[in-house]
Length: 425
Image (cartoon, rainbow, N blue to C red; front, side, top):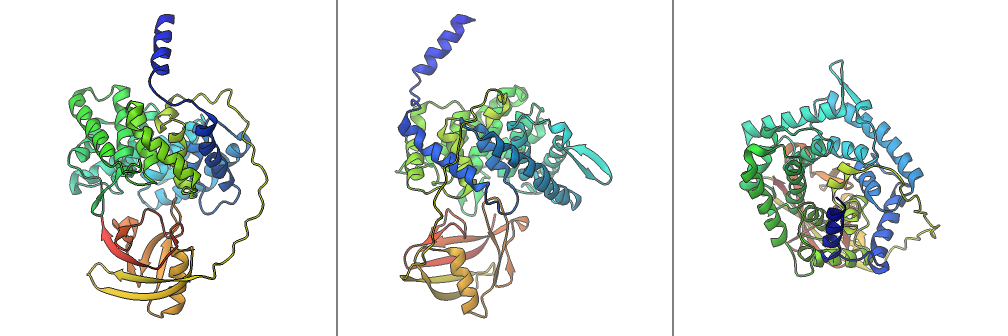
């Protein structure tokens, strides 16, 4: 046994993984603190993805993490209860909640939901949600929600030690085989990454022996898709999908050489303050510390470093730019009809600010948003809906290039044309 430990240690030492130097540590420590600060000014529901990232970190502020866990068990729990009572599919949010609880070593058997006067545990409801998703795929060839949430459900069940039904995992394998992970016209690297972690967990559990060859083929294809998405700057897909993509490569046991440039790309983006949305940080932070969501499976929550202290920061004074830039906004409905608007906005305004200004400038322009873990989600424009529940969304692009950020995060730095198109997925 001792010789095996020594050999394993030597292999790890020579694997080419980076040392945890001060230069490598600085970006993720900064992101860790920013994520912790986001808990001080909560907006909307407490985010289980944020909690999961804080728990997977090497550094902790246990008091703040405990406080956030309490908020999850109150506000998020109540939100999920309401959704379940109204028969709304919530597999993704429920899966993230389960992973967050698991990361805190919380007894999930004490978390229950009541539907039709019957009280059952969180994991029982998650299994039922996955069965509903699977049945929907059987009849419509797509999940009730989407394959990203479906993958999250498989992952959450698996890391909690619950055997994933072969019929459930087979649907994910077939989706990989058929290349069904699309978002509009583009392949979703986020979905491939989440599916990779989910299926790797299933493989590690040894519960899919009947289709071992198909499982291995799917994992190989996922890895190929992720590596093929690498940009010249090292990011996989884009700046905001790289975290999950690296997590997937880590989970699948890829050699460091395959994600080294992507690690450096994330560090550079972190130093350039690209990641300021808490949801984005929550996916990047584990990857920067060479961890994936599969690490939740073996967490013991013992002897943790309670050393993360937030230094006081000076209040940020927001100065509105005197420089104005012209934004052309084109709205394309599902029928193909287009309407074009123009507005001058202060430089560095968010797209949401620009839309608000348009709303006050043009009587015929209206819009609505829905809350999401990523921030406001554009749901209605000029009276036409494109809600997530309808499998439609408003595709946003700037001068023909798809936006990788939401309406509240994308900053307008120069004159440009924004196209808002009602798209199905």
